[in-house]
Image 1 (tube, rainbow, N blue to C red):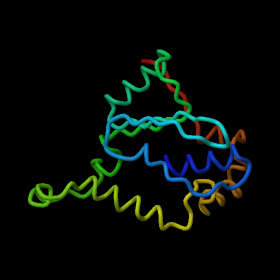
Image 2: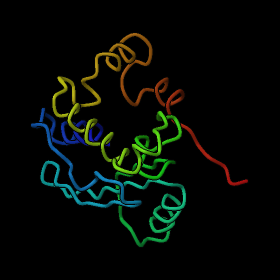
Image 3: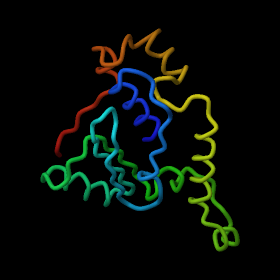
Length: 152
């Protein structure tokens, strides 16, 4: 979410913006919301983790109760740092350590030290667009990267 917000800030400003820390969208709370100023515009952002929370957030948007322009949905409570793909820890460790919080702290620390902190500056993404997708928003990029859903 944060790397994508940094890219949005650059795109809306039309120039590189200093790296911004989006503290309000961090943490383990099921639904987090914030208003961030990007190039003089207030953008409402929301992050939901856990499918029940995702349903609650999406319902509030659909009903007009929430006005979020930038939304991230994560299936696992707390996001991937608390997901089923993470290594399991012994009960003795879990009793004295908040493992998901420790993982998140490490990830945020790594992010702050990273040379590339914006999605559009990632060399692998640049290469993908240069060699295969064309430009962001192109017909090929839209065909391969976007999806639709049908009620069943």
